[in-house]
Length: 393
Image (cartoon, rainbow, N blue to C red):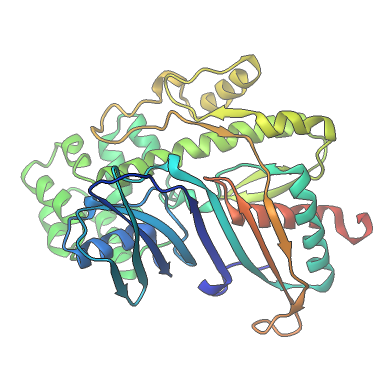
């Protein structure tokens, strides 16, 4: 099974309620293709002649996809922007910038490719089952772009290891890094502490240079240098690690609650998916939320024991989950539903795959709540179909 063989194979559109009333903010419908949301923010701001902070997207969307999302811009003087990788059209004005509370969900259209005939049939049946039974609301791969082979910058921040967090930022190669950035990070590992040398070899433009310029003059002030990293990037570091902890807590509960599971991989770890969900579980699954772990989070006895076990494995406790060494980035204090139920499912018929001869492609569309992952729905359906097999259907 393959997803996102082409950007056109994965389409997502935000469902949003735009704020009403007069005001200084313009609301833009932005269609982007093949670029991350933060790149769209920078490109749109540059075209509008504004600093990037004046262009705000309430949510991030997949880079390798066609995505329609919304941005608020204060004081935008144009009605549309046309660029090769994005198109933005003003659709309204209002009194405030957009927020995650304005989002009602996301509508997805996907083409799942490289399927065998039985595989396509089983996948379609599991999609229909998951509308009723739902699936674990894990954070999926897209959340964990900052996790590297050597660990997490978010964990280093929580451990108050400013130099360690900087090493992740400057010297840890990530899957999405272009080759010039990879080459620089290899140099940073080999020449750590040689700040003038690294400054002269840092990619241009990049925020690496502002951090290295400071370190060149203040070679031991790692905490101050860490705070020169853009706050939104520091927040991504923290949220990735917090999300990984949340996934592990939910996984431990699933292992204890369901006798038959399939496994799928997220960020290099295996996570359980129930092969079936008894009907008596459904009322709880439709309503239960689990707080993202942070120093003020409160849990009942059942979840509290699981939280303590997961954190103990990381040599942490709840009181450690506060970003004390960064100034403008924080752990989320939100609650997240433990289960996700897709809506408005539409399945096409399996057709011959024009990209993979002799294989099948399956078209599917559905709606998910904010913060849930279409890729995870597909992968859960696939894992369950493989666990059940043709004989079990």
